[in-house]
Length: 399
Image (tube, rainbow, N blue to C red; front, side, top):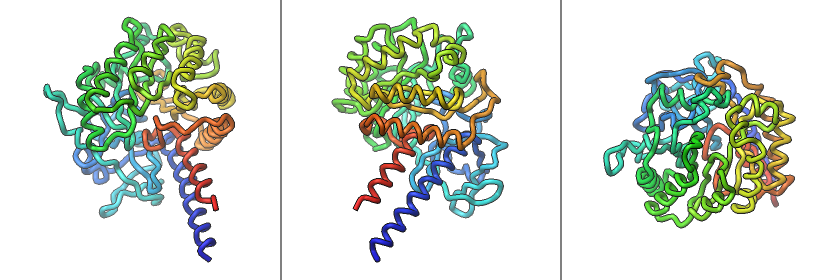
């Protein structure tokens, strides 16, 4: 009798997680809005958007405070992407936040707690929240340079709105000082707000990005006391492959590069600046060297999913997985300020099919679980959620 009851619990949990993943896919592709009553407490009790990198909303919202992300009952983290025309909304009923679709209640949701350090300043008075933010529930996120040189000649990636976002909102410092990043990291890890680090920046070929990142990592290690830093640097491919070893020696446990699009012809058209410099072939050489240095499962290839055909996307995922590289697959947002603003993403079914096949590829090539990124880190990917579903299904069904 107890075994039967346990099996029922397993079924209910699995059905719930599957439903949450599908709901997350819908919210990322359709967007969501919230009533003023539901937004009460943002920026005080609950974590608000601070536009640390891109703007992911479907529409600009100027000075309006919005949630950065929120959590579904079984732990699925969802990025908040404002769309006033979406059928999905968050309403407040008494003390409960309820996600609705066209007025029909779907599930309770939870804004994420605002980290204490968001209200603090660095030793020289800079607001800590303008230096680094928490992505999802536990990822210490820093864009160390909110600029990309490809914008200067109109050769930016067609989906990118990095430069318009920093100009429109001015909610973070465009260029961060190394000691500030280390100081804020120490505050975030000390209060338990962070378990991982994600560092990234726009393309700036006039400087040595590796030297900048190494200095940042040195500051983080010194001020947090960490010997090695759990997390990932999502950087531009280096000019010399030996620089990858310098990153590892600086103490970071993972590294990644944003190839964005696998299909070579589409890559040339959608990412013209990257196609010219450093070029697709150099990206691929960089991934091979990174696996050699960091090991299988500790290297990531960022793809913007939903722009190219699923067939070629999955070819890229398979290519990377075979070589020990995880695909960090972001659900595309055709946001204001990008050249693809106003376009449409694929359907929820397209994304669910794609992510299932991605995780099939990870499992086929026995990619080890990565401690450097997880389903709690951000709300704009689906593959961690699918992997979590399979892992928990396997665990709960094990005798």
